[in-house]
Length: 567
Image (cartoon, rainbow, N blue to C red; front, side, top):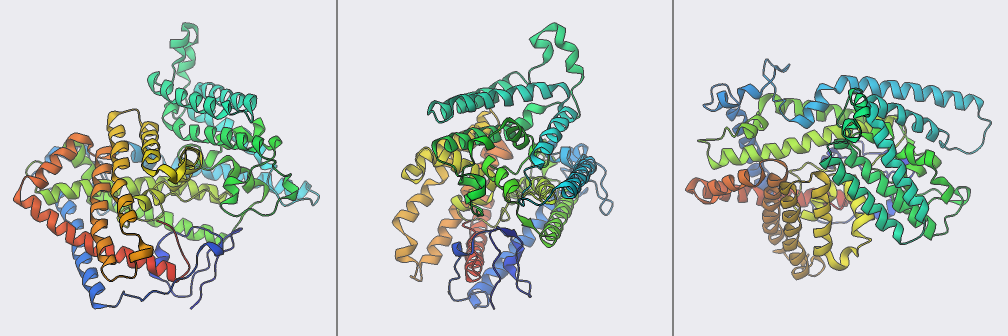
């Protein structure tokens, strides 16, 4: 059975007639030459893998039942977190709507959908007008850049009120620095200094109240828009400012050919192929920085990619959009089910775990991580779907389920993928790339922690994440797959390594995004300080060993069909 490969210029994946297990993972367009089918023995139906599957199914059922049981009204700790619950709509159950970030998205889902629909409708009218008055010419959408410019300005005024003046001033400052220094090596240094200083001041000054600048301007603070806390979402905008400045710097140092003479770029070339200097205009810059579908949360695009998709539009088919919309709907229903039956966020926030076993505390932490993954995936996929309906293909952020990762490197490639691509292009490669993996990863994760939030908790997470890549780097050096991959023991040794990787990833993310250092310390004390804890850890290792083998085979199955997601 052969698979029809997608064209690098057409966003449609042609699956086989029969639904396959690997089709559950979201497809990432890539040039056909990059993925070559491999022939390895299929292990799914062997006795070994049937045992692994049974163990994993039993583990997953137990992992689901524990938080459901902890969330029952009859549980002894229920009164402690009941106040955090809100009226729900599913089977008469309350909903755990206590996560502030997802609550903001969930409560405003209908206004966001209406706003997106209005934007798309107005833009459709603009496209139709252009099609009527255009007299042939090149197949491009550059005429829409000016529309995006004005739409972006209207959007930030509606969202942030008079704070739009602050945003516009910051954007203008970055543009002037980039243009003033051009190909000078001082340009990137000043760009980074400017944007890091802005991030720090945004947080320190809490968005700069007009009244604190001058008493006569205090009246402007009353017009703060729908979303007054503009500086919270500005972190995403800052990445676009750096992207524009760095892409312009590289364009000034290379001889970018006129657009007309360039061939169709593939997915990677859209990131790296520079545009002529005149393409880096103020209109195009603001159009990119304030592009409405991606402004609030991403996914993150580079300036080069954004411009290429207007100059050489991708053929995003209706079939692709429908398939992705179904994914979004299923994802939204999944998190609704979890929030209605597992109140782990409320339990975590109120620390209502007294008397719970190590296994129960472990599942509170695990399902909080799953909810972090689910909420971010839903937010990013909603805005990515909006962009797809606007004929723009932003990078997919969440490639795999959080629980379908065994490698530290693979995890970060598939988690917030667009941000990972941004880090590689603008930090990791410029500072030396793989020549000094550990030091460069330390720099990357330190920046990532501070970019998320200027707190010690996130900084500790960044340093832990940097530390946790070291064992995998050493293991790859000591036991390279090219040398030992054919040995029978190698796959099992990798599964043992996967256990430690998964446990370290969970620990690091519990510190950074769930319970912090104190909560993680309490959990580890319960695991390593009690007999029940050691029993739970032993059973966890058996389940993870089995799951790792299934993950290995899943990726081998992908390779047999010419898919190599590198994560």
